Amino acid sequence: ADFICIQDLQCSEYDLQDSIFFPEDYNAYFFDDIDGKANGVAIYCRQLPKAIMTGLGFANFDMEGRYIQADYENLSVACLLAPRAKQGDAEQQSRKNEFYSLFGSHLQKISNKRREFIICGNWQIAHSAEDVQDTESNSTTSGFLAEERQWMDELLASGYVDAFREINSDQDEFSWWPDGGRDKNGWRTDFHIVSQGLKYAIDYGAIYKSKVFSSHAPVIMDYDIEL
Image (cartoon, rainbow, N blue to C red; front, side, top):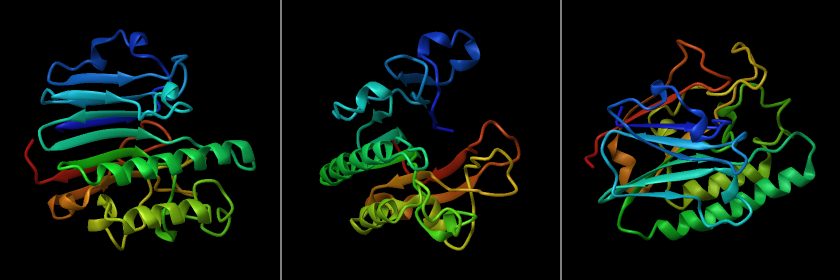
C-alpha cells in the first residue's frame, strides 16, 4: 500500500514504543487528541510528502485529533475521524451536525484548488439503505438520520465521489459492526470520498474481513494515479 490511514487510535504517538508501529518503508505522521486517550488519526506514507497538515482550523474540534492530510504535487490524501453521537444525546448530535456544516464548507472551498483529494476514514454516516443492514430499526439512530444522509447527498451532488460505491454499486457491504459480531447490524461508515477528477482513476475497492482487528474492517482502494 502507498498509504495506510488509521482512525481512533485512542492513544498518543508517544505511547507507541514498539517498532512495529513505525515500519521502515513508511513515513508515519500522527495527530493526537489533546489528552492522548481518545480519538486520534495517523497516516503512513511510502513516499515522503511535501507537507503535512493537521486539523482543519475548527476551534471546537481540532484539539480532538480528527484530521491529518499529506500533500503532494497534485494530490492530497487525508485521514478523517468525524465526531459520533450517542443515541438520544441531543447535545452530541448538535455538535456532530456542527462539524458536518463546517467540513462541508471546507470541502466546497478546496474543490476549487488545482489538486485532487482522497479523504478516507470514518465519516460516521451510512449514506444509503445499502449501507445499513437493519434500516428499519436504525432509522432514528445517529449515523443514519435523514439530515445526515441529506448532507452526504449534497456533498456527492456537488461533485465528490464515494469511491467504493462507484465500483460496487449493487453490493451490500459493511465496514462497522457496533455490536461486535459480524452476523448482524452491519454499517458502512468508512468511506473514501474523492474529488471529481479521480472518478475514473478508481481501479478496485474491497472491505477486508478475513481477520478481525476491531469493530471496523479495513477498506482497501486502488487508484490509477501517480504522485
